[in-house]
Image (tube, rainbow, N blue to C red; front, side, top):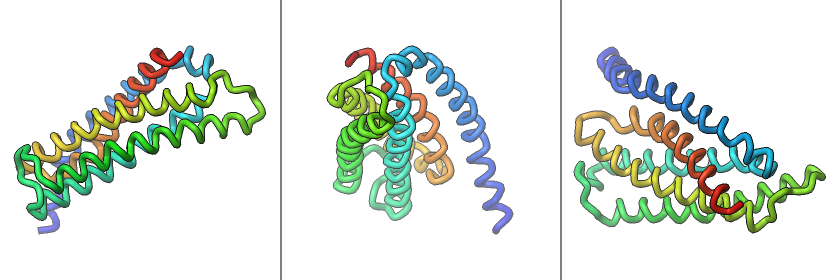
Length: 186
């Protein structure tokens, strides 16, 4: 039994983790395109890891809750709206919005404590964080719900697929959304 479980986990995880490595490189290349913005708005260098971590934590928690709900039969293996799915969906969106705003404020305060003059005002950095975090959160919440249901319906264990997939797609989506937010706000 143990060896078969090991093989199953390896079979389900290895292709996903390989794609995640490629996605990580793509996120790095996208981050490279943020060089100009990072120089223009130095507070972004503090905001970026915070917003990536926040988004990753919310999406990973959502993925774990959905996988558990699927295993327990609280959510069906098809896209049908119910109270459990609704609560998880809206909680994830609300958390992304609220924590993005808080992250923007804290990033501005942290940068101000360095003694340097922030290039962006607190409303600008907070708005950048809210737009990037909320937009990436919506994308990732929709993807997490879809991927959880699809993997479970296909006979895969969502716990083996969701976390690495969402983490990688989330990094790319969040860096892209941050770039978009900077273009909109500044």
